[in-house]
Image (cartoon, rainbow over all chains, first blue to last red; front, side):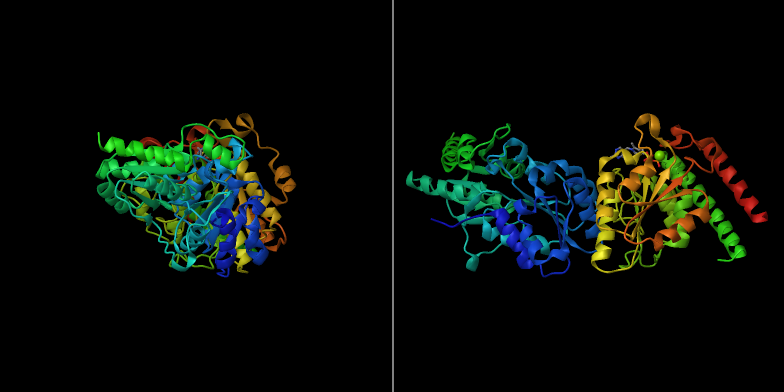
Length: 314
Length: 285
Ligand SMILES: Cc1ncc(C[n+]2csc(CCOP(=O)(O)OP(=O)(O)O)c2C)c(N)n1
Ligand SMILES: [Mg+2]
C-alpha cells in the first residue's frame, strides 16, 4: 500500500526545505503544531512570528511585510483563514495584489473529530471569487512540495488548501511535473473524465480502476490549481469523453465542480455530475466514516460517472 | 532649533496645510462625494509628517529604505493625496480627478495606482495591522526606516485595531508611531454616544504603548512628540492628537454631517474664500 502523508505535513517540510530564501517569513496564529509551520520555525526561528489567536490581524500584518519585499506564508486552519479573515485577505492582500501565501490547513470534513466548526467546506468557493487570488489544492505530499515551490515563485496572493488527514502518496518525485494552472492527466480514458482535487484525487484513481472493471474507460485529472483553472484541459476532455464528473471535499456550491461547469457551459456543454458536500455542515467522527457518510468515496464517483455517461447517451 | 527658525517653520507649515485644505475642498467638490471632515482634521499631522518628519523621495516612491505611512482611516484619502501632490509625488492638477472613472486617484488609497501611497486601505482597522507588518519587516531586515500610521477614533471600535496594538507591543516595535485623530466624531455622531472607546490613553498604555498627548493642530507639539517618539526604545508610540473635525472651514468644524458629504458650489466657494483669506493673512504677518 502507498505511503500516507498529510498535505499539511508536506507543507511544513517544504517551508523548511525552501526556507533558506531570506525573503521567506512564516506567520501562524497559535496553530503551528497543527499547521506544521513548526517545522519551519525550528529551522529558521528568526523568520517565524507567532501572531497569536488573531487571524484578521495576521493577514494584514502579512500584507504589510509583503509590501516590504517579504514572501509571507500565513497559516491557520482554513475556516479561520478563509472566513474569519476573509475580508482582510480581500482588502489588504488581494486588492493590493501582495505576495502573501495563505497556508490553510484542516480543510474539508476529513478534519474529523473536531467537527463542523473546524471543517472548512466553503473555502474554495470564497477564495476563488476574489480577484488576484490563486487557489491550489494539492492531492498528496509530492504535489504539495511542488505547490509550495510554485507559490514562492509566483508573485501574488496564493491560497494553499491543505488537509489534516494522512493521504496516499500518488506521485513519484523523480518524474513529477507541476505547473501552476495546469491540471495533471493521471490516466487517459474515452468514456468519461473525472476531474478531482485534493484528497479526492486518490479516490478518483480508485474509481477509475473500478470503472475499468465495468468496461468503462475513465480519464482521471488532478486539478490541483482551481484558480486559474485549466480551461483548455477541461474543454478538450469534454470534447474527447463527452461527460464529466468532478470530485472535491467541499460544498458543491462554488467549488471545483462549479468552476468546471462555468468553463463548460460557456464553451462546450456536456453532462457534469458533482461529487461533493450537499449544502450541509460536517460533523464529528472518524475521517473515513465522515467521507463515507457525506458521499465522498470512490464508489460515489463511480455512481456519478455512470450517471454522467447515461446522460450523455440520452 | 532656534526661536526664529522655528517660527518660520511653523509659518511654512501653516501655509502648506492651508493649501492642502484648499485641495481637499476642491477634490471632494469635483468628485461630488468624499470625506472632508476627517481629511481636514488630520491635515496638520500629515503636513508635519511629510514636510518635516518622514524620509521619502518623491522621485522614487518605492525606495526601499523610505519611511512608510499608512492611512488606516483610508476614507481620508483626499488629505493624503493633497499632501503627496504638494510633496511632488504627482501633479497637483490631477487632484480634481479624484473618484473619476478615468483617474488613478481611487476613492480610498490604492498603493498600486497612486505614487507615494504605501498601503491600500479603506476598510477600517486593517491599516494599522499592515503598519505593524512593515515595522516588523524593518526590524527583521535591521533597517532604520520608520513606520507611521494614522487611526480614526471611531476606527478604534474595530477589534482588529487592538489585535494590532497588542502585536506591536509584543514585538517591541519602537520603529512604529501611530497617530490617533481624536476628533470625537464618527458617521453617526459622537464617538462617546455611538460606542465609546474612551479612555483611549489608558487603553493604549494597557496595551503596552507609550502615549503622548498633543493638540493635533499645534505644529510644535506634533514635532516635539515625534522627536520624543524617536528617542523611545522598546515600545511603539501612540500620539493622541486632539483635533477638530472639519478644521479650517468654519461651517464644517465639529459637524458630524461633514464626515462624508461634498460641498455644493456655494459651500465650496465659501470654504475656498475662508482659506484664501487665511493665506493672505499669513502673507502679511
Ligand atoms: C470596516 C469598515 N466599516 C465601516 C466603514 C465605513 N466608514 C467610513 S468612515 C467611518 C467612520 C470613521 O470614523 P473615524 O474613525 O472617527 O474617522 P474620522 O472621524 O477621522 O473621519 C465609517 C464607519 C469602513 N470604511 N470600514
Ligand atoms: Mg473621528
